[in-house]
Picture (cartoon, one colour):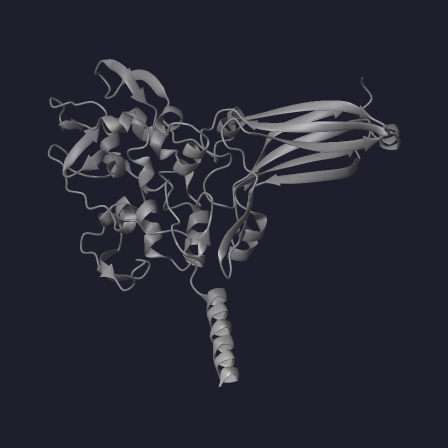
Length: 385
């Protein structure tokens, strides 16, 4: 009898772990705030929710937004390939095209308690042109049939209701840039797309707008008085100067018994969140290699600042070497006297990777634009004191 019980138990365990290796992989909790698309009523005083309509008056803001990744949240080629590879999950739409009228289907409910399996029906109010705008103006600036902003403007052509939290940091941002992973089978310190939690872990106040919507003095609408407004640039990992401003690299050397050692210290000096943040594929690579007088490369060592996970049968974060705010990581490269006689300099290179190469190949993404770029380069002479 006992043997049969042990056999049944063993078969159940095998079946359980077999399922864990092939199950759909859900890595976060679908909270109420983004379980459903946003229903948006047309505010009084405007005729369209389209960003181009808003841009007819707010021209400078429209130009800035149109060049941002928010404007490309739906049309970005990488997102489209990745979305299809992961099964075109409905929940992804609620951040990339958050408005109900941007989505082809209405969500009537869910077949599962985790809300990853929605019940859908065709959306009669689907607007394909609005869909192409991704995270468009109305996503942040329309609530309950009213235009909202950081300042009350009842006399505007469309009345604006003040929401002071919009000027204080994360009112709209936390809708998508803060997820949780309170699941029995997920073990993260910080969940993917957990930018807000990274800010708090780094001991900073969550204030996205101070960096991503930097202030400038100009009219909100041409012909009106100037005032302080946020530039709607939303610059981040796709904007190399922003990454370069956030990263400080210091090189130091010391003599050793058989040569010298060069240490590269990398510090996140500006980004309140981790550097990099966002999807787990993003990472920094530090490379140091010897180069001779003719430009021929020699020995090289490389380090990655990234997150490493075990995804199956359970999701476990194995390592996170990214840089939280004001955090420094140092890496040592030793050069022997024999190498110094052959090579005359050390090339130091830090690159920012938007996508892991292994992931790019796995999903079949044929990128037309680079998926990594340099953020620091230095040639350090080896034969100087």
